[in-house]
Image (tube, rainbow, N blue to C red; front, side, top):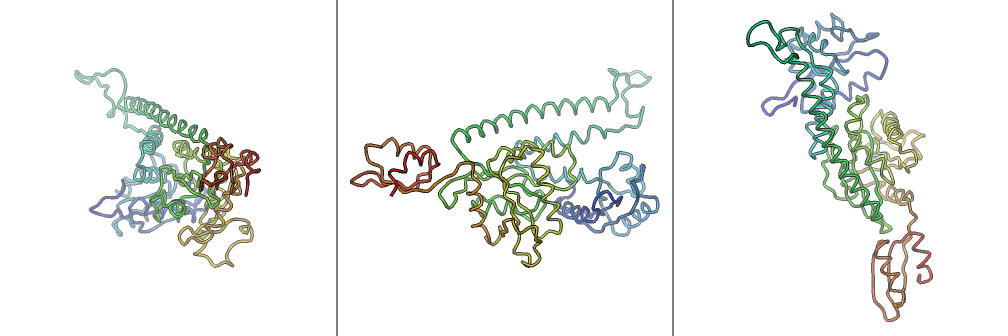
Length: 413
């Protein structure tokens, strides 16, 4: 954790702009990440370089400026908007006498803070160990248990080698535990498929409003805060559509730009909830200047997960924060909503129904008592809305698929 109850950690943000990505937008996101971790971003310093300095990340002049700012502004933590080497971290800390973390460490800290389920905690620990393993550093012979005197001889490996072996062993244990959790998830998924449960996953950039939409649609009570990575564990809730059809709505972990590959891998199983869904809602914060980038990040990930054949409904959220004239022309085909006010939710529900894998139909039937088996089949395979026994048969109101409708249409009233 980078914060504690006694004192809010004051953080200095540092970035090197090499022109390889939008450094300003990335730094804005780093501000939000630092706040989500519970620290206070005091100031940001940026330097334009062709490439980061190998030893200190920033140039010597900028490093001296960082040292002075840390002393004058009582900075507790330096957060660098890149992935640093152990040497870079050590050199900056030696120069400034302030603790240094990089972007990946910060994201891992937030993951550890937010994860609640067993799977989430296992994935966080695995990601942390994957990041730590290649960064174990020693100081030569003083870090070793090998020596020349009595009582210093060991089994022939340095402490670093022992630590590495311990980490690898723990990683294997975590992978086995995650495999058990994933097998349990697969069993639940197969049961849903067997029972004909239709699933709809909400995916998108972090802080796009996925949890708020989940709450609006289902009263799920999922944590909904204006913080990045507020949701790290997938939540499933039943959603009843206007036609009477019920679908399983799944909230997934949010995405972020420049998320290190091994972090995506660590959380792949939760994201695969989206890959296995019948319908995907790609939710985007329309009020963000980076809305187009966010949509692209999500679409690229969906493609990598093999979701090419799954219907994707692109939804622009937080439209209540925008003047209608500000909406770009190429966003016209997307569904615009406000999960907070409820605006546009009816259009979203209609779009979900239009993209269901099986065409469903709402019908009212009068089924003769001699055809009681049909009523039983409707109860089992359809969604029964109402049932009433009359003198000449059973009046049934239900939502059924096309196959069942072909059997029942002769009794439609």
